[in-house]
Length: 296
Image 1 (tube, rainbow, N blue to C red):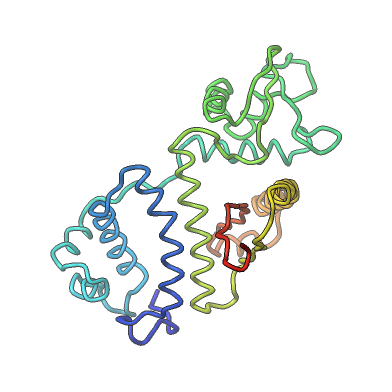
Image 2: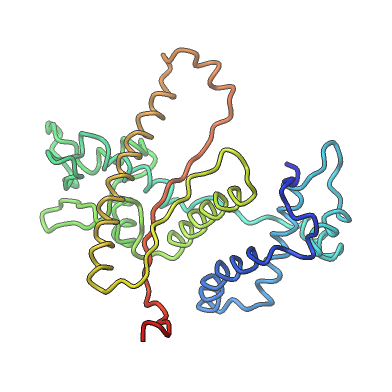
């Protein structure tokens, strides 16, 4: 991938509007870093690694080998550090096992008709069902995704730790959320922080660079709202947003199953094309606004 032609012609003088935007982006990030005692020297070393990695992968020249000297010139990272960072072992950025399995299980639970009630909502599942029962239970759900690789009890214990599900006194498993969003578990929540913020920022960045076609990135913004208005809007955002996410999840499940159908026409031609991933998310945020002089 070569550098985009819409980049500023004079990198030493970045657009003022971009600097203002970067300060807004970095402020909550710095607040998070300080909460975990991540200091500026540590962040600088991390930034060096990322600068070198991005320059190496995304700013190559056609038919030319990427060198330490060119990367150092592009990034401002000293050539000695560039050489060291290019040769060091990379972190494993794969999702935690609880996430990769959990996402598939929750997605099936909220979309497969076998696990829904008459209102189309995920119903409680018996932890264990009788062998002759026609009602699929929690074990059936786990086996439908994990086959024989993971026991239902292991999954349930992890979900109880993360706050994804709860178990009633008579051993019925209830889903606490319509998405795999852990209420606890730092590793799992940090994974979603990285994936969701990264993808949102990537979409916004590509749009800023005017890559075509643009990615969907829209918001509804209002200030001057009272607490009751915020409460009502938050409730509507959660209910209507979850309805949209569930609909997209159901369609994505069906489309993926259709692609994996061995009897599908043109299956050979389709397998030649690289597979893609997608991410569509929602967020809601509110905080007290600054009072201007005219409001006093």
